[in-house]
Structures are given as C-alpha cells and as structure tokens.
Length: 162
Length: 284
Ligand SMILES: Cc1cc2nc3c(=O)[nH]c(=O)nc-3n(C[C@H](O)[C@H](O)[C@H](O)COP(=O)(O)OP(=O)(O)OC[C@H]3O[C@@H](n4cnc5c(N)ncnc54)[C@H](O)[C@@H]3O)c2cc1C
Ligand code: FES
Ligand code: FES
Image: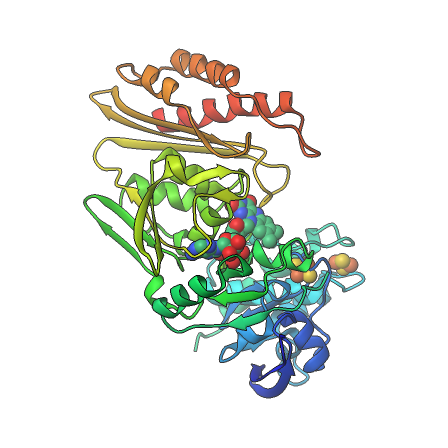
C-alpha cells in the first residue's frame, strides 16, 4: 500500500519534482527531498511553530500538512526571504536587535511575521505581540523578537507599496 | 513522531467524497484542516488506512447569512471569523471567540466543522454550537439528515456522525434586535485550550431579559448548556447581584473533570468566574 506519488512542488519560485509517500509531512519533504533545511522541526504537533512556512501567502505549520497537499500551491520558506545578499527587513531587524540566540526558532518566527505583515501591514504593536505568541523560543525571552518585528513592521510600512 | 503509511485521495467533488466514505467507512478519515488529525497521526494515536482530503471541495467553503441565521460550510476556516462575518452581535461574538482558538497559523487551516467533528470538550466552537442550539447537517450516499446539537456529542472525541457521513454544514440561529453576548475563557498561555470558559447571550427588551442562553466548556466531556440558569435569568434585569447568584449556582451545578492541567475544584471555581464575566459582558 501507499506507494509514492510524483508531484511538483513550487518552493520560493523554483519547481521541485519529488517522489514522496503521502505520509511525509511538508516539513520533511522540504528538508529531505528539496534539501531546504532552513525550515526547522521541533515538536511535530503544531505547538512550537519552528516549521512555519507560507503556503499561498498564509503562514501555516508545515508539520501539520502533508507534502502531497502542497501540490499546486506557492510555498515560501526562509531560504527565499532575502533578496540575494540583501537581507529582508525582518532578518535585518532580528540581527540588529538580537532577536535570536541559538537561532533554532528563527526561521519560524521570520516566516510567521513575514506572512502576517504582508496580510496586515498596519498591525498595532499589541496585535504583533499577540501573533508572535503562536511560536516558541527557548532562548531569547521574546522581548527582542517582539521588538525586531515591530521595528521591521515600521520599516516595511514606510516603504512605497507596490 | 511520523505517521503510519496510508493511501491518500483528494477528490474534486462532494459526491466523490461520499462514495469514498461509503466504500472505506471505518478504515478512512476525512482530512479537513488537519490541525487535530495530523498531530494525532504524527503520534500514531490515529492510523487511518485511507485519508480523504476535502480541501479541494470548494462547494463546501461558504458562509451564508439570512434572517434565520448563519450557515457555515464544512471548509470554513477559523480565520474566516477574524473579521465579523455578519453584522450585529453574532458576528462580533464569533470574531472574539475565534481569536481564542489556538494561534494565527493554526486558524488559517483549522475548520469550524472539523472542530465539531473532533468534539474536543475544550473546543470554543463546540461551546458556541451547544449554547446557541446549532443544527448539524450530515450527508452520506444514503441521504442527508439534520442533527440537533443536543444529540450530536456523545462525549470526548465522540459524535453521532456515522462512519460514512460527512458533516457538510452548521446552522447557527440569528441573534437579532436586543441580543447581547459575552464570552470569557481562561487558559494558562495565549492560544492554549481552555481550562474553563463560558458563553452568554441575552435578549433584552426595555432592560429586561426576555431570552437567555448560557453555556460552559472545558469542564466535562462536552460543552454544557445551563438551561435551568437560563430560565432564572429570564424576566430579570441581569443585575450584578443576580449574576453573582447565577455564577454560584453554575459552580454548584457542574462536576468538572480533573487532569494534569487542573484539579476538579480549580475548574469549578473557573466555571463560576467565567460565567460571572461572560454574563457581566452581556449585561454591560
Ligand atoms: C497547537 C494547537 C492548539 C490548538 N488549540 C485549540 C484551541 O484552543 N481550541 C480549539 O478548539 N482547537 C484548538 N486546536 C485544534 C484546531 O482548532 C483544529 O483545527 C480543530 O480541532 C479540528 O479542525 P480541523 O479542520 O483541523 O480538522 P482535522 O484535524 O482535519 O480533523 C479532525 C477530526 O474531525 C474529522 N473531520 C473533519 N472534518 C470533518 C467533516 N466535515 N465531516 C466529518 N468528519 C470530519 C476528521 O476525520 C478528524 O477525525 C489546536 C490545535 C493545535 C495544533
Ligand atoms: S514542528 Fe511544527 S509546530 Fe513544532
Ligand atoms: S533563539 Fe534559541 S529557540 Fe529561539
């Protein structure tokens, strides 16, 4: 039973032809089959948010989706956030404000924030704090993550919108 | 932490879903948002042989509203309620309640219908459906039936749905002129399941309560509607003294479960507090 299924996954604008068992989560497929290990796996039951990626622009837990479900969807991972050598404002703000220590949770926080700010650029500081409660960090104590995202949100708002 | 093997099907139409359910019955499971099922599969607490993914069935993704109320299709995600889906107290209440369900990314996928089918006693939508007296529509190749919410839950993670039935929609009655609502939930951390919560809806006419709905969740094997206390509220003004009395009687009327998260005594105290705060919000 459960033979492999051949699908094309569109990750960060690049098509990946993969042959996967249906039981493999999107997180595993991204890491093992697409070689994109920036997406981290912590708890595998939706609690920590380390695996957060964007699927059709929405932040979701990639450990709670099967890879086969992402067929035909636009997936974005942390590898696609920077523009060449230019960091995304969120990445820059995390760096400048010590929004990370060990960095394990960072890809999840970045993709969560990137997705939410694209949908709702005008979020208040309180709304940002509420959204960031979605993910866990065992190092920073969160203050600098909240600060970094609030600063990046201001920076993104100040940019001309396309 | 990896699911057992299964066969995956993603049908394109409702009739195909029903045919697959009829064929595989207990060997299959519906995959909606996956926000409860996939964790259970990752832990191998659930090992369906066949998974029927309904995420492509666009005809199940709708919210319709008319004078009689709101009809919620099976693919309606929690996030659809972030903004008020209908003018008036019902839409505002649903939006407040939704913000208490898990977290933003989980709400992007999890569905209202999946919450009811999953029947977690601490589910906010189960409390809403119970308190407002929702009707549940189930379809199979055998036909369609409507289940009153009072007959729907059999206990923790257990419902009246047959193995070949799909929950297709939920109907919530309208809350029109004069209705006011209150919701209060306590959990240890933002987004956690409720340790105790209460929902109140009161219809006032010239300051007097004419109709009342009061329910509590997270305290026993299913959400419960406190009908006797509803009856006591009707005809009064929902004064602070009255609310205190009702909160105390709610405390006396429940016998909560204890688990690693909270003792029965603690949960009972939470019931009193949640009922008091929900009623106070509705009466404010
Ligand atoms: C970290 C975390 C925190 C959470 N916190 C909360 C919380 O605070 N409150 C809360 O209520 N929930 C919470 N949830 C659960 C979440 O709300 C789920 O979305 C919900 O319980 C199930 O909906 P789903 O669409 O994801 O269903 P799925 O996970 O896809 O399915 C759940 C079950 O219902 C069945 N099913 C689904 N749809 C149908 C249908 N239409 N007909 C028949 N059967 C069906 C499935 O076969 C399965 O058995 C949390 C989840 C996570 C991961
Ligand atoms: S690994 Fe997905 S939420 Fe923890
Ligand atoms: S920086 Fe170590 S877990 Fe967040």
